[in-house]
Length: 357
Image: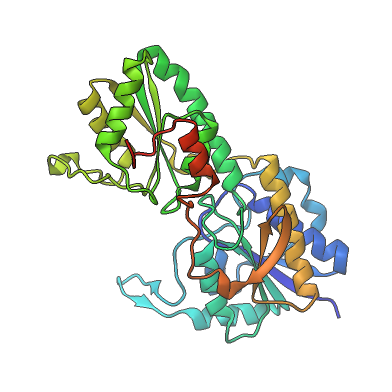
């Protein structure tokens, strides 16, 4: 009997999702003769009647699609089915409606592409259906447990590094401190990797408790040594160090980068400018590394379903594809190791991490 599997993308978009969908569909078709159904807008498409989904045609999923950013299936990072926001401001459990939508599609398995939060929701949603689920990790944060890399991370680092490459000459031309705020929630992987690759002078990440006076002292030393500018990278969740703002108007609010630029300018006397990359890190053409990762993970996800395995996530570890139980992924997070290779490398290069003088 011909198998019929589904694939959906959930959570924030990132580069490499289309390459992932393509890999799943092509492996299912060429390897097993299966049909792949693409679910639109993550789990939200399951609330529509008929369900928002379509059979994917392998002939139309060419190499051009793998180069495109975003996800042509659409995604969502809102609308938790177990606490769905309603028009009256209340929340409701609409998981039963989504389960009914899944049953309407007549699937024999589902490949879910998402971060730890999305995979946790999918796992809980599918539990009463007994529908086999295989997860594929994707997030620019790279904070999914038990995988060295997630789809989208490498491209985000490349974009942040390019931003530093562009900020350095303009900072030097005007003798400014250039502060770059990058995404990454509580992880800090993008900040530390891009900071090293882009030659930053200061990198501030959530896992290391940094102190503003130590950053100020480092910038002052650079200026005393004849440097006309400095590059600072700060993760969006790095906080405001241990210094209380002088007034409410000086609080970090939603932008630690802007706050840090103001504080550095005031403390050092140097002109400082902040750049917030925001969603620019997500919406790019995936670099080769993300396309390769997406392809390898997508193929292995289908192979797991073919082998009768489920409730697992495919992962990249020690330069090869493996798979791990989903219960070792959901509810966990992988942040930057404060004693790991990247932190040690940054310190060895003379990069200030704000935690020591």
